View (cartoon, one colour):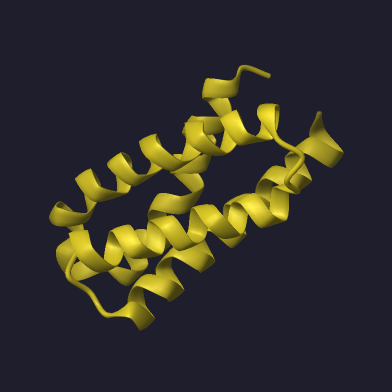
Length: 104
């Protein structure tokens, strides 16, 4: 499967979750959401190809990075940023594992 299709699927899975947490700021969240994913998604795949770190550990790093991004870019609380980033990344990670194990 084309890697960019996985990126689009990541966006499609994570955006509704992020939107749930930032529904009052739905116009303002689009750019930070895209920028954070454009940063973390290629970085994760670079590390997948060049290191021996496990995928769950790297996903934790992605969630922490995105959490920090939402905290500062959206000026939200740490609690809200944590919940949004970890839930969105947890769901997309789980969906990716299902797709990888049962569809591909």
